[in-house]
Amino acid sequence: MAQKQPKVGAHPGGRSVRTGGSPENFDKQTICWQMGRADWSYDSWGWGTLSPDDWTQQVVGRHPGLESMTWGELPGAVGGKSAGTNHHSLPLDALSKSAQVRLSELSLDDVDAVFSLRLTGTIRVYGIKDGRVLRVLWYDKYHGDPEKAVCPSRKKNT
Image (tube, one colour):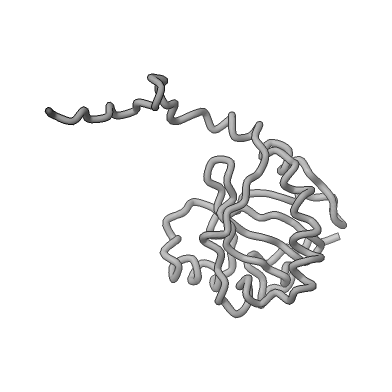
């Protein structure tokens, strides 16, 4: 007796599986974090450089507030001294040369952009947005420092 082969796209119970989806639909979904791509070993922005206090105060303490926002709400969150956008996408050429080199070392130089989340005035989390998932890369406590930051801030002349 020949075994039955499953139908491609079939779902147990006879229902079909939906694939694809409109990118606009992700804007209505809350952010989801994935740490599988996290850069643990990099000296400047590696997650392995965080102390237990940093984890507790800077990451875990701020994580739930961001997690409750939708992707569509994130770019609208403003604050800081200049009341600029806290969370936004950055093209690769906006990153420091060190960050661009590190992306290449991680075989991620084919991505179009990275996403920046502001935790505090000087702390950022960078990752790659994939649908509703932020594939976390770096913890950067040097924002504003042109020598050490993933993305050196461009101070406005006032």
